[in-house]
Length: 236
Ligand SMILES: NC(=O)c1ccc[n+]([C@@H]2O[C@H](COP(=O)([O-])OP(=O)(O)OC[C@H]3O[C@@H](n4cnc5c(N)ncnc54)[C@H](OP(=O)(O)O)[C@@H]3O)[C@@H](O)[C@H]2O)c1
Image 1 (cartoon, rainbow, N blue to C red):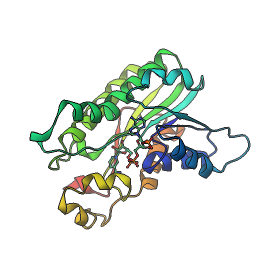
Image 2: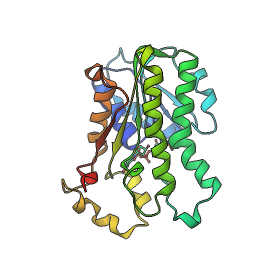
Image 3: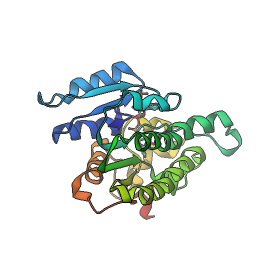
């Protein structure tokens, strides 16, 4: 299953998994955007992909009623970035950012484990962000929501290890994709690519490769890690 599958990293992960022969459940709020991705999957007859239209904040407890009974991989890529300087933070904004970035993956995993929908030997990858540890002005709500994800990944990895379920995170730097617009309040962002040690912003497909690696059996002895994919941004 891939959440946030309608665009950006989630879509790139879904396309890559389908290419590798996996059968997918795509989850998002927007039916038409998800349907476009379903069409783009363009895979073999054995792959019976499904899509689930659901809001992971207000309807997360319904998710287990609409999912297949057996999942090997769960990728949570759904997220939002709402920027606000400290004095403009509100409880509503906090609930909205933490709701999808942090609470949703925690509650989603809880539901999957309680209902035993995630197979023994399964793998969870949560898409976090370098913003958890890399300070930028006005990014307090977003960065701290991803900090919660990072912490949760390590604890969930420990709790679920006895079931042979692995839990890892991928922390992208700034990508040349949808969420870039969330940074447009910051004038320096236009030049951000040039400041990245590898000289450019990242691509969703490059993050997807890291997600797919951690989700795969190639990473069978890796759990509780956070793989940074940022072109070297956090090196300085
Ligand atoms: N792009 C970057 O530069 C960057 C950098 C670091 C980390 N990240 C992280 O990477 C992840 C994906 O980012 P992206 O750039 O691919 O984002 P994106 O293109 O804006 O896509 C976000 C996805 O989240 C889904 N979503 C948002 N709220 C939801 C909700 N309440 N319930 C269900 N789905 C919801 C959206 O679904 P709908 O289509 O239904 O709205 C959309 O598919 C996020 O967690 C983000 O924090 C991104």
